[in-house]
Amino acid sequence: MARQGGGVRTSERSTAGGGSRRINGRLLARLIGEAPVERPYYLAIARAVSGLVLDGRVPTNTRLPAERDLATALGVSRNTVTAAYAWLRDNRFLDSRQGAGSWTVLPDAGAGESSPSPFLSGAEQIDLGVAGPPAVEGLRDAGFRAAEQLAAHVGGLGYHPYGLPELRHAIARRYVERGLPTTPGQIFVTNGAQQGVALVLDLLVQAGDEVLVESPTYPHAVDAVRRTGARVRTVGVTPQGWDMEYLVDAFRQWKPELAYLIPDFQNPTGALMDDDERRVLVREARRAGTQLVIDESVAELAIDSGDLPTPVAAHDTDGRVISIGSVGKLLWGGLRVGWVRTTPPMVARLMAVRQRFDLAGSVLDQLTTTHLLADVMRIRAERSRWLRRNRDALLTALRDRLPDWRPNVPGGGLVLWAALPHPVASALSAAAVRHGVHPAAGPVFGTDGTLERYLRLSYTRPPDVLADAVDRLSAAYAETLAHPAQPHGRLYV
Picture 1 (cartoon, one colour):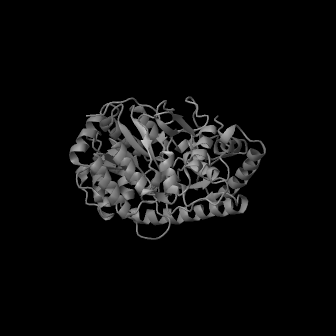
Picture 2 (spheres, helix red, strand yellow; picture 1 turned 135 degrees about the horizontal axis):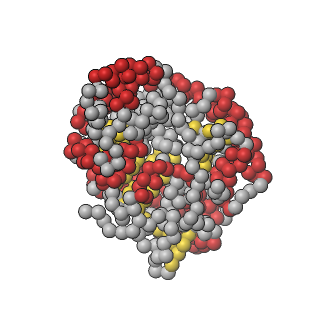
Picture 3 (cartoon, helix red, strand yellow; picture 1 turned 90 degrees about the vertical axis):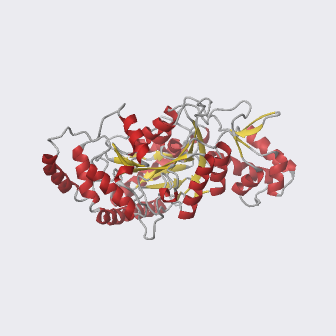
């Protein structure tokens, strides 16, 4: 039975701190880091905490530890922590109420504000907001072969509610090759990964349920969660990965009904969860009674050599891991083919839910995909070489033109997550449009207006175009610094 409660957004200010997450002094001290060398100490602590909030690593509406507990954990006096909390209140990173404690908020977080979408841009611009690669070599030939095979299908109705049988076999075979025993009966074919996510949420989540997501994360998935009326809870992730103690603590505090995570080249940070971390993730989900929805949309897009971890579902023993896949990033976005890997009974339930929205997917697209998956190892190798060339070209351009930016070096996926020296991502994104380039501002990938220190930049364009785009970004960045926008760079258009 779903837990009761309202679908309150995490960005809303709690008047009493009720329902907020708690973080203990030891864990917050570890996130702050070693004892600061900056003087005065209270200001260094306060700035560290505000940075954690702005970057989404400590979510808004998180109850901070008592001053005495944090002081003990940091090895400083209570007066130092009292002064740090006072600075956070004065700068509107902290709300307090006598008897209710203090909890994190975001300065000037207006309820009606929204970030510009990274998926819309003008035709004359260089689009770094959309992580959509061109079609793989061989797609047209696969399409011709699929068209020839239609003769074997046109005698039927053309509806395959579970997916074309030969495609379900091909997808199951690929899971087996990746180290996860799978039968075709566990595969439910969808019109892209996003439909798979939406169907699973519609089936498993009710208004008031707790749903755990990463911050930052894929924005359309968060939108789908919010449409259910669920309460969105977040746990931070960086290019260095997940703080597993913090993630475990989230499961134990909230016991979410469902968790949506991207452990394979996480979008947008590029982080990759290792096998031990995947084992812990599944264990804690089992203890909390949480269904895990694992987005594997870019799992096949490794760039650097090395062994990849097995799918998260390989650690599952009771069917609580639901894997979402797609060919949109590996093959081409124009092939609207995705899938859900789960238990056969769950496949039947998903089919019943699907009938409310559509009846089946395109037979021609599914036949084309089946042909291409038969050659998946060649396609993966070609994609890897292409992505490595583009990623390295973008990194080189950023180091030459914007040396004070700190982009990650992802081992896979389609995007860089670039840390800026100043929290001006939204203002910079608006200025960049005027210079003919379209990046994706960090707050698009958060849940409450955080992440103003980050841009997501896709490297799906040729190297010369990427170099031109960075030149334009450099000009836009100089303009942004010369003409600052509102506080924290929070400019929405």
